[in-house]
Amino acid sequence: MTTQVSAQAAPAAGTRPRGPRRRVTRRRMLVLAAQAATFIVIFGGWQLAAQAKIVDPFFFGEPSAIVSKLISWFAQGTPYGSLGTEIWVTLQEALLGFLFGVAGGVVLGVLLGQFRFLADVAGPYIKAANALPRIVLGSIFVVWLGLGTPSKVMLAAVLVFFVVFFNAFQGVREVDGNLIANVRVLGASRIQVIRNVILPSAMTWIIASLHVAFGFAVIGAIVGEFLGAQQGLGLMISQAQGQLDANGVFAAMLVIAVIALAAEWLIGLLERRLLAWRPQSRAESPQAA
Amino acid sequence: MRTNTPSDHRIEIAGVTKRFTTPEGTVFTALQDVTMTIEPGQFCAVVGPSGCGKSTTLTMVAGLDTASEGSVTVGGSPVSGISRGTSFMFQHDALLPWKTVLGNVAMGPLFHGTAKKTALADAREWLRVVGLAGFENHHPHQLSGGMRKRVALATALINEPRILLMDEPFGALDVQTKAIMSNELLTLWDQSRPSVIFVTHDLEEAIALADKVVVMSAGPGTVKEVFDIDLPRPRGSVQEIRFGERFGELHEQIWETLRDEVTRAYAQTAGAGPDPEGAAA
Image 1: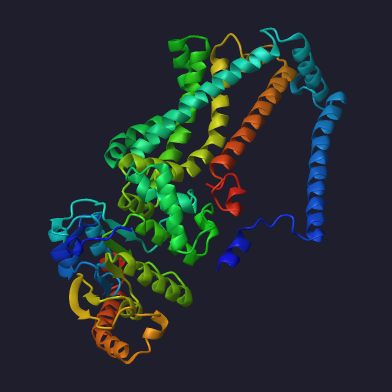
Image 2: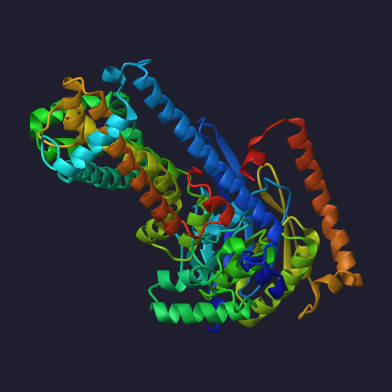
């Protein structure tokens, strides 16, 4: 019995025969090549079409002009400050909103998941609040909190909150009753049950929601800046829009996309760390839940 | 291991009725006037068709649920909530998948405020006792079904229970592994002699392990008959004991009673479509 299981638990890597590995490498190269080809077709086509005036570069921009726009932002800064400052302003708003939203969502989700009475009372209000187009709350927040960071943080936090809340709530509800009964019989107090069973179990759901939640945090920050700001990537986009500067809009979009990808990567790392206990095959698909 | 004074862990279930209210508002009776006594250190097996309230009985002795009528007392005092001297081994794996094997076994002492170092040392010792030394840092999903049961057994026994409640603990195992686990359970039980209620649907397993077999009937759950198993202890291998003459007699005698119940319960579920008894099992 002992040998049987230790063999099963030993990592299989390194003992794999060479044939399959070569096949895997070849497949990966093929995928990479196809991805590069897709990039060239789309952006090369766009560039050629713009140069040949098939599409109007004034309205649709062109890749080369977008790149030179980015270079000039890097080198000479934007009209509102250096590019680094603009990125930092937006990133700060998104991050703070993300943190507050996640904290609020997890706390309230776990609380309502634990206390059925609270959940029944608060249920309709939360559903109603969720049904509102929350983006328009941004206008109210700008009125309340002014053109600075707080109004954007607030909007981002509200958007993040609902995503995380519903996942945390569901996660708590899905906890296996057997596990709870077991630790209770072993002597766990209510707090110990939450710490040892409910939070780790709901963590799968919560982490899955973080991927979407960070996207919402960025949306909140950018839209908040759209609605009224003195700095930030959102302001740059809305100004570029006002000047009919398509290249400026695309360049700012590109910067935002890079930020979002970096955040996604970080959340992926966090996920792999926190959910390391899961069986390998499931841990490999990041958004299982 | 602590030696228990024998008088403090008699289990008395007296006239217990348990009713559940379904979400639709109707009331259904899971247990009706159930009475049984398990003497200190006695190994009692409970058999019966599905839906006869075997598991419900266990949850009430564990203090996870309360009786609608009647009383459950352990060692002379009524059960009100979970008490320290009781351990429960569940039908399905109740190990925490995010904790290592060692972390799972150490939970009991840690919950009771034992220092972490002592708790981990105890857990290591118990893993050695159940034959899992070297697997401390594995996660449950890396173990076989039988090994997970050993971990669950260590998790239950580390709290030095006076009462050990087992709800079809080996139900999901293959026949050979089940036999091995049964032997080990008997050996471990013999060392500290807690009072055991062992719920099973396997009559042979019940006779091989227990001092007393309680046959329950379904719809609502009641005690139909109680049989004393006078096979000598130590029983030795559970695979071999079932070929003995006395075992055969007991088996025949109890099966006579059990068969009627199983047939009746089956006819009910098969005839009446989805019934609440089956749903509660």
